[in-house]
Structures are given as C-alpha cells and as structure tokens.
Length: 220
Picture 1: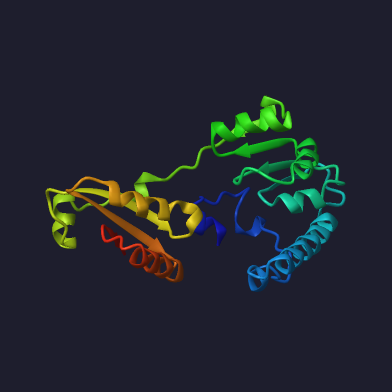
Picture 2 (picture 1 turned 120 degrees about the horizontal axis):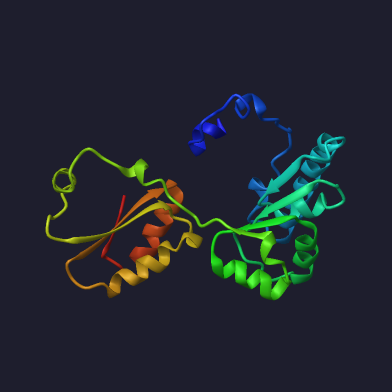
C-alpha cells in the first residue's frame, strides 16, 4: 500500500479505496540502459499512460494532476485540468521544452531555494507559482531506546571516535561517491559509516572504494 510505504495515515476521505490503477506495460525498466532506444520506449510508455489518464479525466475538469513526470504532463497539456509539477532535477537542457511545460502548469514544487530562484530567472515563472518544499526526514523513524554508548558497544564501535553516518540509497546521484572521496580528507579519529542499499548498488560502490584504495569508509 502506498499509505504504508510513505507512512501516511488513511482517512475516510483519502484511503486505499481512493486509488485508481491504470494497467500499463513497463517499457522503461528493461530498456533503460539502451540509450536512444530506451528513451523511445520511455516516451511510448508515457504516451500509453497519458492516453488512459486523459480518458479517465474526461468530464472531471476540477481534478488536479500532480506529477513529477515532466513528459507525462507535457503529453497531457491539452487538457483543461490544473497541473502541478514536482521538479527534482533542474533542467539543464531542452530549455524550449520546459518553457512550454512551465507555461502550462499552475504550480511548480521544488526542493530548495536555489531551484526556485533559477526557475524565476531563466524561465520567467512568477514567484507565486513556485512552492519550495525541502526534502525532509522523519527523525522519529531513527529514534532508538538504546543509548548511544550502548549502541556503540553492541555494534563494536569505539566510544571515543566521531562518526559520519549516511543512510539511504547508494546510487551515484545521492552523493555517496562524493562522500567516499571526501572521507580521505577527514582528520584521524573520524569514521565514516554508510548504511543502505539496494545490494547491487552498494556492491558497485564497494568495488569503487577498492579501486580508489579508499579504506576509511565502512559500508553496511
């Protein structure tokens, strides 16, 4: 359930029964490493999904379309519905495409003030149409009844060292390779521990550490 995955509480008005699913073939996962051919299949999948969504939205002019998929919103731009685009990666290329998209969407959600300023400057988007929602973490998810001293003891970590801790995915865009390289510059008495997955990305990162002879990073 998306509610369970994202830790969202269900309500009588918004719950699992509110979710409408559209069957669509997955053409992206098996072709993502095929270069231009993969991009073509990705476009086809977006087009198929946009067609089903367009049919569903027919007769629902008050429905708001909220998405982080720029191509999907572009394909749906002929609809009268209000669009909200959640932007994560800043558009460094295809500026003409994004000019068209930004002119169509009602609101743009970005993760930091820098992106908001750049969108205003480059794409001339009105400030009132930009909403900054920084990435966040629920600190309560990491709360633990065991004290720091006891936790270090159970994990076999020295009590007198400072620890730089990362938890999350090991994909390159997360910055894990930057942290790995920076670990070499840290003073003695500082340990770097990186916890996460998935397994294939973590193993790839561990191979990179070995190739670069970086020994100050501990992965878990």
